[in-house]
Length: 594
Ligand SMILES: Cc1cc2nc3c(=O)[nH]c(=O)nc-3n(C[C@H](O)[C@H](O)[C@H](O)COP(=O)(O)OP(=O)(O)OC[C@H]3O[C@@H](n4cnc5c(N)ncnc54)[C@H](O)[C@@H]3O)c2cc1C
Image (tube, rainbow, N blue to C red):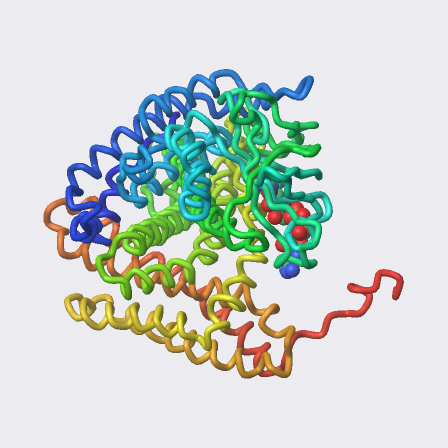
């Protein structure tokens, strides 16, 4: 069974839940956008994902990448598919027309990458950093670098990498040691070793544009001493730069993606942005990449769910409860309530995750193009606030969903011939890279929710409460769910202040409950979007009872079976606030104490 792009579900979120075509068309940059155009783009993107990329998924996993003599060979068909991707203009989709892009909304790019990741996560890793590199360079690079590199990145002719990680510096980039020394001609020479660099070497493009974090000789220690450099594989005069791949990793998943060790031996590079401001410049790329990784989690969840649903409809075992005896002693397992629960949990996470991901895509467009500077700032702040939540929640869900999908297959999922195990293996990395989900939780609570005196949390809550008040009255049957959401928003606001007050005397406390606060915020956002979805589905029910009735059922299922996690999360936060951070046995931190 191959991947079916969920175009109807996507259109429901874009048109009915977010009213995206109408909102986008108020922006001068997207005045031509309407639902028809968005549908057309998504149909084409879906066709590309399903027909070109998806057929390479299982083979890419089996074959993996090969490394010999400094060169990487990607799995059969990968390079040809990438050529088709560029010929069709997909890399340029959401890049500005002044740089050769198509100038279409980021929201469409988000949907494109959901489908590509669903079809083939390993392949999608190669173009996955293109847009982040474009955003970083178009914001921070000098005009000379933009002229030289931006066009090639927009067209996809050259792929880009993000070179951060070193063997001793993963989550803590402040530890990294790669050095950069200024030359008389204004360029820099970079020396050092990076590991785990996705697409650091490949056979898809003639040149590779590495964006590298490094330290100047007189730079202070820690992350404040980092600067960002553009280091191409081939220099503008065509000579080979002194940056080489020294090996690739053997991995449990995304085997079609080359994860490279890179050696920089006095490689030539150019500064991007200001000296010592490398992390700020890189954050443009990292934030874009974090949303992109959220879309990976979503895509994998959808692809695994489709496989599980198809299997559950075919596989027969036992008679389902409440079914009268027939000649057939066994029903398809999809008739079993336990299997229905496995499937509904996946479906609710996917549909909720899609609303959240596309809302962030819309925020990105509004933050860039709203006519009003104050509104642009507001959308930007909301996007920054929700980015770690999207990255962590959607990737946790992607892995959980892949596991539930495998459960539907029973033992046939655990053996490799069904291929469902690939989703589980591929999904696992999304919880680790682009800042592990633990780092996302800390970023969220410490830097987004608490840092500004709770201002962004207050705005987020006010936005939800206002929307619920304005639109909630039309559907009384959702009154209970509405109250549950409002209880949660009130809890979040009060608790954010309580954590801020308590953490003054207990600096460890917020770190212990960061994950819970992130997940609670994720539930607030999802519950808000589920209410919008349910209202819209009720309004349109008569037009297509099966489809819209299903959306309402999913909303009710979410509130009945997934939202109750909120009570458990609040319980942990309350206990820690009342009793302080938990005592940790000393033999955990001092291994010689035992
Ligand atoms: C397949 C793959 C592709 C990758 N692609 C790239 C790439 O293209 N470019 C790139 O630069 N890097 C890339 N990475 C590296 C990736 O971003 C890092 O692995 C990740 O940031 C974690 O760093 P680490 O592996 O050193 O783990 P560590 O930082 O050693 O962390 C180990 C564990 O401790 C936790 N932890 C560490 N510090 C803290 C803290 N302060 N608070 C709470 N928890 C903490 C982490 O969450 C994790 O669970 C890739 C990695 C893989 C496996």
